[in-house]
Image (cartoon, rainbow, N blue to C red):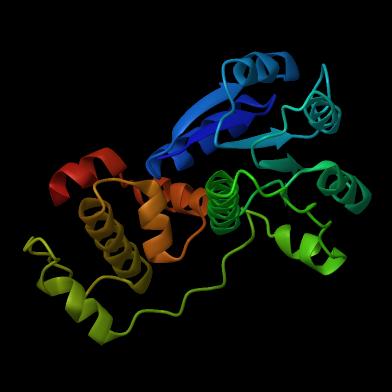
Length: 242
């Protein structure tokens, strides 16, 4: 478990990142502006900081410079923005940021960047006498590759065949029997199968949306929309699975 400071002026972003990283077992501290971030840093260095660039009082790059100037940039910092340019990303990494994520942030890229940051922090902690090398600014291709949106459209799913429906009619991993009529119109049969499918995974993963998103290959936001469309309630599905 790591202590992660999330600094962002958008409540929705703070809550989403807190939920995702909390599901991963981390302790999350939230700050909605630079002043709150300064106060959090004054209580001790977190293991990692996720820092928004555009904030109303002091922008993230300015706060990053401030921490560097005052000798407080002793933890990995990952910058976030939905409007920053490549130049801004390069400047942030030159100052000392470890990485840059463009909003909306893809779940897998977020988790990968956080893991890389925590690994870097552990390496520095194990070798305190060694002066860390400056972090090189990412190549433009790498920066562009980071910008995979969380809300990217999903590829169309192939229609189910009889073999798939037949499997759904048997039982899930918990021994719960399912019944699905072949007389249903295709759309209704597909929706019924998908409800079974998601209820199965929610039950198996204890209702964790992060793990279900990984298992099913869906982005988290798309998963929420799909469950709402199908009328599946994660909490009830988790209890049913247990």
